[in-house]
Structures are given as structure tokens and as C-alpha cells.
Length: 607
Ligand code: M6R
Image (cartoon, rainbow, N blue to C red):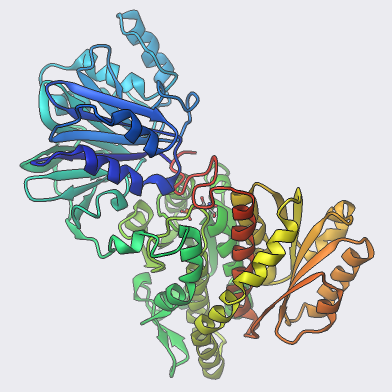
């Protein structure tokens, strides 16, 4: 999604702004631009990659100590130079960058056009620059506060005015903004990654906040000009963690990091001798945990797949009814929340708009809301009643990999925590923890098969369709495998519960149709063998993920990837790894941009 960077201070800003934009590239974008104050407001924009913006600005005068910059992910109007941000008013006195959507922009535009304003872009955002220019009377923050009362929609907004060259005014409603504090230099960004190289002291703006940044300081008020104080946070991520560390792509780095990130997720939270878990972040007593009557889990995309696995785990081991909902559906229907319902909200970014709004809806309906997020200080993390950080570290690749396995790890911990307060025995709890501690090493063994998976990828790189089948705990993994493949390789892929195949998808099976079957040795093994036979009988190609030493399915398969044995409930953490690698290799062989697939954004902050 769109990204914002802003700086005002005592040093030239152009390079820092462009570097900041580069750190936001992973969020997905299709054009970019920069505005620097030097005598007037100088604006440069380019379609495509940030390297295009660098080409456009080469040799231009971009000296200046205050500036704002933007990466745009098109919503209103195609990706081109005119629609790229920053946008300005007719005289270029006001310049803005904007994330979000102005829902009443047509009405505002009509009104402004009637009083002589000329618009040049297709965007909703341009109207903000004209509105500010229309109402400006010498104080930018007063004007911004005034016009925000006229605006409907969502915004993360940064504004400059030629008459107040050292000032940036920012405002937030529904689209994240973070302010970085430096020495005689202050920063603004839509994502802390953009300014991490400059400062680690930040404050997060809340919805309804208006911030004024100058080299001397930062003031925050409400849009009604009530002074507000916002807590200063220290970021503990390093710049190294958001760089590739020798891997050709972030996605590959993140796949290979999983032995570590899974360990980071359970470190300090497992109690091996007690066969129990310690999840202090939930802020719930044993009695409160025992009183949970029903759980609703809200999420989107990959996080939804983790949630589905959470349902299977919690219902089987803790016996609590669980419902998993797409956040976008939950927020617009009339969900029933009974007393005793706890709502878990899963989001890597903690900024997904549908998930955030679904969480707010759940709270309005009386549920306690608990966040499972990765990004510290994200909106979901801050707005939830309590929650658990998954500790996967910054995930830059748009296709989620390590965040998924960390989400699943946390759901496993949660399952044991809930189950031990019900019927799970001490011995069972101890056994699960022992097996969980072995998972990172087992993942290393799977990662060693990357070259073998590359060979399989070479065989199937040109197919048009792929089917992924799994049963039980491996069904959410089939969904996740299919999503990974389609989002980075653009091959159409579907995940199905294996038994559902005969209710429709079996019609697609022919010698050109690869079917990936996850058939680890659990209770459903015998059944899935039957499903593999059904594919074989129709000459479909079979790639199977099996437990080490498995014979029967392996003999029916065209390609076999073995994974180490584990408890059934832990197997998904292993089974997903070869699927991530297969997608990565296929996408790369097809020449696709695996880290920034087309049309996708890392953090989906629009509906
Ligand atoms: O940040 P979130 O976990 O809330 O994101 C949800 C989805 O947008 C995300 O998982 C998406 O499906 C990924 N591209 C999957 O790889």
C-alpha cells in the first residue's frame, strides 16, 4: 500500500527521503514522488520503481532541509506520473501526500471547481491540496484541522506550505503514521521501517491526531486543537533485520529464518516441567481463561489460514467452540457475540483495515479483543484489550512466510494454555513442549531439500493450474500453499479438503494437472491414500508431502518430499515449508518479482 516519509531538520533531506521510500517498497506501490522545500516547493514524480524517481531527480536541485515523499498504490486512477503523489494546489503553495481514501472527494471537487480550482489528476487525494489552499489564512495546522472536518474517509496525511518552509503537518484517521524524534530533526513515516536508519525514538499517532513537525519539536493535538501527549517508544528492530542478509530475496531469507523465528516465538513462554505456557500478554487469570465459553478469530489472507488451524487445534485439545471469520465479512454482517466470547484478532502488520474494523465491531458488540500481531506498536496491537506479539521480526516479502509459522506457534501455545486449564494432562503438555522444541531442527532438515524442490519446480513452472489437497490439520496448509503459489507466480491454484475433490474439482484432473497432496501420517492417512488413488486413476500428476519413510503414497506419486515425523498438531509447521519453497522457486523460474508481486501490498490499509 502507499507509503509516506517526511523530514524536517538540519540536514539535506532528499537522499534520506528516497532511502526511506526504498524501505517501504515491500509494501507494494506503482509510482513515487518527492517534494522538497527550497525557496518554493519542488516536486518530482515517476511511474514505476523508485529507481525511476532517482533518474528523474538526477541533476535536479533537491537541496533543502524539509520534505515529504510518497509511494503510491493506485486506487483512484491508473499508475502514472500525474496521479503519483505529492499533489499540489494550482499555484504549488500547498503540497500533500496521502494514504487512504477520501470518500466524498467528488462532492468536494465539484464545490472547489465551482470556485475556480483546476484539477489535473484522477485521484481523490488531490482535493486535499486544493481544500487546504482554499482555506489557508497563514497557519497550516489550523487550516488542516479545519478542512479535516469537511473530509469523509480515511487518511494518513502529510502537508507542507511554501510560506512555512520548515513545517510538516501530519494527520491520521484509519491509516498509520509514526513520528520519529531526532536531534534538531524530526521524521514522519507510515511505517517505522522508513526511518529506522535515522532514529529509534518514535511516537505513534492515533486516529484523530494532528501533528506539527518542525526542526525544534513535535506537537500533537486533536483535530479540535486540544493538546495531546503521546508516549515515546524505543524501537528494538535493527536496520540489519530489514535487509537481505546475503539472500537474493527477502522471501527466501524469511523462509530460511523460520527455525529461529519459531524459537523466538516460543522462547520464554514455554514451561517444560509444568507442561504449560506463560502468555502474560493476554493479561488473563486462570479463572478468566477457564471461563472462556466461545472464541471468535478474525483475520484476512494468510493470517486467516493460521486462524483456521487455531480452530482445529483449540477445539480438539481444549474443547472450546471456535469460529473463524474473514474480517471483511464479520464487520458488515450482524455477528452474534454472547457473554463469555473472546475474540482473537490475527494480523502480521497489525494495520489491515478490514481486520482492524472487525476488531472494533467485535468490541462494540461486547467481546474482549486480544491481538496476535507481529508489528510492535501497530494499531491492532495498541487498540486491542491485550495480546501477544508473535516475535517473527520484520517481514518484508509481501508473501507471508515466517509470520505464518510464528502465528501458528502462538496458537499452539494458546491451545496448550487453554487445554491445561481444562482436560489436558501434565504429561501431554510436557510431550507437546518437548516436540515443539524439536521443530526448528526439523525445519532445517526440510530447508536442506531446497535444491530438490527447485528440480520439481522446473517440471511444473509452466502449468496453468495447481490443486492442493490436505485433510485435518493439513487442510489449512493446503489453502496456504495455494495462496503462496498464486500470489507470487500468478499460476491459478486452489486448496481443498482432500475429500471435497470428488464434489467438483475432480473434473479438472487430467495429465496436465499437478495435484500437491499433503499426506503426513496422522489419523487421516488411510483416507488421503484413497484420494491420491482417485487422482492417479485420472492420470493427474502427484507431488506428495509425506512423513519420512512413508511407502504407499510415495509409490503412487510423481514427486515426493519427505518431512520429519512429529505430533499431528505440530506437523503443519513442517508441511508448510516445502510449499513455501516450491512457490518461491516456481515464481523465480517464471521471472516474477517474488518480493513485490504485482497488485499486492504488504499491508492492506484500504477496504
Ligand atoms: O498483515 P495481515 O496479517 O493482517 O495481512 C493479511 C493479508 O493481507 C496477508 O496475509 C496476505 O494474504 C499476504 N499477502 C499473504 O501472503
